[in-house]
Length: 323
Image (cartoon, rainbow, N blue to C red; front, side, top):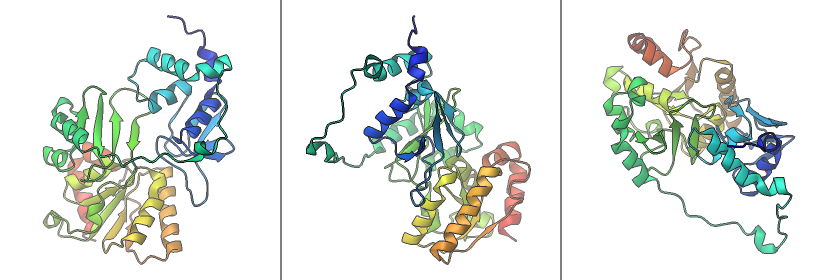
């Protein structure tokens, strides 16, 4: 098979970004920066973003996703891990740019009328995936029990080879994770904080830790479920740049729980922790929280701690909540 336009297509990454912008799939922040399609980073308040394109390559300084136009097309089009398909799809999309036949934007008034779309309900799809969850051992390998898998309606799409994680019980949005090797692991369908109910209702497993009032704030959904696995409440922000979303949530509906800031044990996680503290102060919210710099010890995050040393994870968190 000939890939005669391989290099030419790579050069069209800026044009592809422009196309995505026209379609409303990505937001331009200027100077080559965009809201990241992978982690949705982009502080609208300060009009900044971490996703940047430089020549033929893109890189997100928040979630570290990187690659070229083929990687981005594969992600945006939800393609299977087959580079030939990535090339062919990219060629099909960008052919007008290669040929110089791309139509100009219409200045007609009707072009500015926004398309009205109804909210998407993923309930049937996510329940179907949950029924097929036995087709993968991904969640088991992440240390999650059958009880947790069913409680959060976790699923598996055999055709797409992805696992599905609904944000909340209403199934109006979810994140999926691909199960093959790729720089682009996650895709969001909607964007919500995972497991928000625990901010407002008593912990049903509070007797395990003799506490009711703590909620651990994690970056990812699997990390949040790692805490729930051992009997603690936790929410998953969906990325280090989503702390503003939590501030907004607390403004709209305050929580009387004590938040334990449990973001990843790395530079990005520490930076996001600082951002949360600053924004909480700016919002003048009377929200109780605390930070334990030794929370994960030598581990990067909650799930790594759980999988590597479950007993140690439990004992450490007992010490945290019974302080």
